[in-house]
Image 1: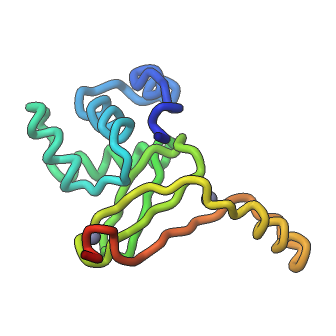
Image 2: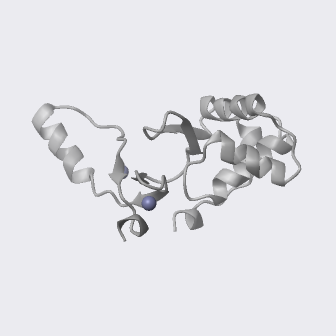
Length: 143
Ligand SMILES: [Zn+2]
Ligand SMILES: [Zn+2]
């Protein structure tokens, strides 16, 4: 759904961020691009291993931190005691976090612009962005 609107060349993106396109960096960017939920470092390492790319935990942490510093990715914390990463270029969306199985889904169209206008009117506060995560039980965990 959201993915369809994202179309870019990962190599060029790395070049724009003044980063060399190493196999690990490229693979991580490509992985984040085709996944519809924020990923933790363990999942990224597993993916790299499957694709025969050597990168230990420290390397992957360094890469995602660098990506985040250069504005390619966003670091997200969902009350799990660990960070997750997703592409910063994604359109406004939020996460539905299942507290039972740990599943995470994206949801777009938060319809929050009315609330932002309200805040501006009532508090004189100019909202530039918002962060909103939902915690609960996914549909299969309710069965
Ligand atoms: Zn669940
Ligand atoms: Zn939103």
